[in-house]
Length: 310
Picture (cartoon, rainbow, N blue to C red):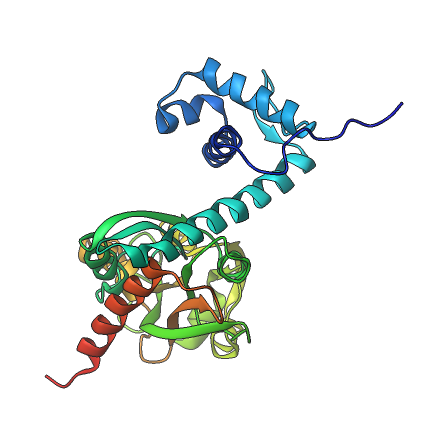
């Protein structure tokens, strides 16, 4: 029995692109029902579109039914290829922007978690200024740093914001923030009301450690602590600290809300403290993109204004 070959034409039609855009949204929403609101079309229409796309590609892209929505291996690969294709199409459109006085196109940006509370709102203010410069669609993906690096390198993302733990030769880095982190416990923890705290007391407490990449300095600060739990992001660390059973490090801007409400306190802040630098990354040698260039211009102006003497 001969295997079926995909019938997707060599030259993509508007129909093909429409189906791929629907597929992307279905995957990102995690199913047909959730995608209805985002796409503003009925679930039945989404189902027809997915059946049509699977028929044109001769591939089973996803499982759907009572057991829920899940991508097949082929579906996951088609999703990644779709992101690259749509990013390439958007790159073409933004290059043509040179013919127009007003910027028009997309900015795809990846950001790591819990940066919105940074007092220096460079990203927020740069996006605000960019949006005022034209008909710009801004797409933010909240994903881990390694995925942001890969997305920028393969063109799915135009830019990203990551902790500067290492540098890759294919990326350009702009220093944005220096983030301070301190050691915390909650108001329910035995150390919350302690007048003085010793290193020995801290070493005896259950601690939540980050399950993500850290610098050597940060690892050294965590080594004396009693590893009793882990979390893949800062929100997870905050959850465990607030149980009253654990101590852990959090960025000061992120913990400020709980400090203000009397729900957390710092523990030996002069000794248990570290700084994390965050950078905006772009791909070296990437094709000209006027939307990205406009965003970077706004970002550079904010960075320079902060560095200028008062």
